Amino acid sequence: MRFKKLIGKLHLWLGLSSGLLVLFLGITGCILAFQQEIENASQSYRYVSKDNKALLTPSHIRSIAEAELPGKHAHSVKYQDGRNAVVTFYNSEPAYYYLVYVNPYSGKVLKVKDMSTDFFRVVIMGHYYLWLPPNIGQPIVASGTLIFVILLISGLVLWWPKNAAARRKRFTVKLNAQWRRVNYDLHNVLGFYMTWIAIFIAISGLVMGFQWFSKSVYWISSGGKAMVQYYPALSDSTITKTTFKEKAEDILWLRMQGDWKHKGGSFEVHFPENQKESIELAFNPDTDTYWKTDYRFFDQKTLKEIEVTHLYGKLSEASTADKIMRMNYDIHVGAIWGLPGKILVFFASLLAASMPVTGFLIWRGRRKKSKATTGAKLLQTRKAKLKISSSVVN
Image 1 (spheres, helix red, strand yellow):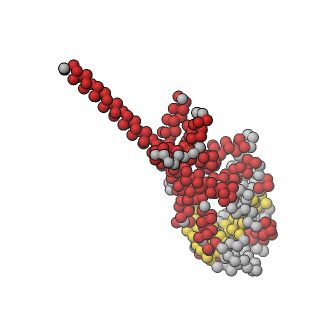
Image 2: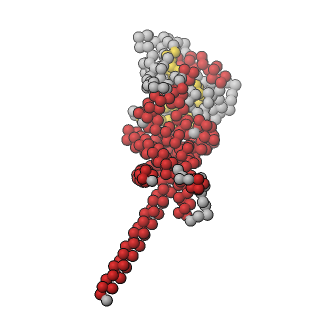
Image 3: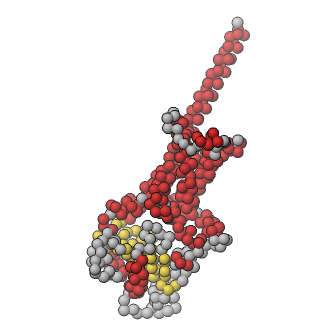
């Protein structure tokens, strides 16, 4: 009993201190759960009818997109069957982020999208950083997530029934009871069911939020190996650039286009920003997730493939620990389990957002009850004193 009281105190004060942050992360998590489905349904400029014409090359599409944004340089172009090509413009200093949708057959520009004003992008920045500078916002969100994990574990300890009779009550909400009891059941019973999904959301959030946690998960899943941090694959600086008849990225794209067309999915070409960087090709056979993507790097001077040892290389060469780390984002949003997974994440996020509200109402109700009990005792004491005083006088 003493142990449970200590856990109860910990649960209470951590809940009160992090309640608003948990509420915010839960609500924004609900909004982001079906981001892909909402955007696909509402943004018609994403789609294009198939044509018998040949697809325009990456360099051609790049030049068309860059004409729409003078002074800015394209980062990559992505192809996908039934979709318009998407040219990404991204830079940290000066900061900008644009998407340009181009018909891959005709070269017609369908949409120039400033992602700094995109609704879901704004929500994501709040969910990740609280709209603060990343070096300030991310540690706050990660710390709040860590507290939430402790709340989930301590909540399970408090929920755990003493006996079989109590166990039956812990699995159902008594809807015909007074509102305080209903609120109590909503916090405890729904909290129990939510925990088994929310724990995966929270742990995957910690992997993104803390380097030490990410490295620990990799170390455990790999059997004691250290995770190789991402590093850029660089072209050989000692070789003079070869003159090709076509652009280097176009040659590589044409060379690998057959595999992409045969397997489906998306095919992305990343342009080198300087003479040292390599050309990156990313092939994703399953556009509903990210973890299956094959990342390949090629020397821009010789077109020779550059092997990498970090986890963002070829999927076939990834270890089990590498795959677990690759899956992390897809686990966080539920995409790893398809649409049912996203539905589970949506409801788990909704229930997580409700926990601070129902928990606060429980705490406030108990506090009022405690004050009322204390007041009644004081009143009884005063009455007793008055009786004693009157008897002495008489």
